Length: 149
Image (cartoon, rainbow, N blue to C red; front, side):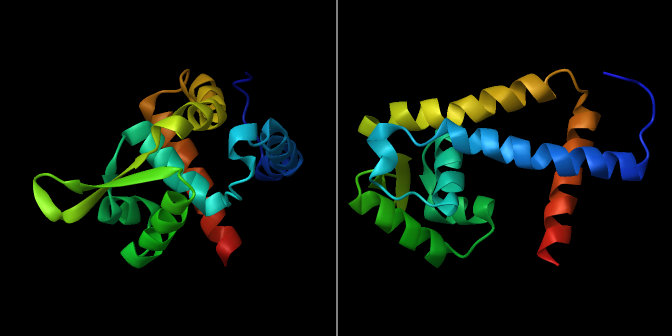
């Protein structure tokens, strides 16, 4: 990797060429055969990623991480539970709370599918310092915000 600076326009040009290739490669990974019939949407992937990497959690915890209303997460969890992707159980410590987790029979395919992207990100981010990683993530978040208007 070059230590030379990069002008804003050169950076934009590079990223405008790079982003479609990255999206194309991610799409080519494809949904595992065991999950194809489930009609998973991008919003489901974020929810599944949190459960995969951080383990079981409550609807409110998921809502906080996804930055959406608990009612929205409840609808997604209900949909994925009916499809057998997620399991819900009462929290032993507080029976009013529901703990959500990935169903055991889907854990392997979901891990394989989402884990490939995580492995690629780990390879890309590991050489960076914590401060560089923070700047990279903050830059992507700023780009997303700018696209949102």
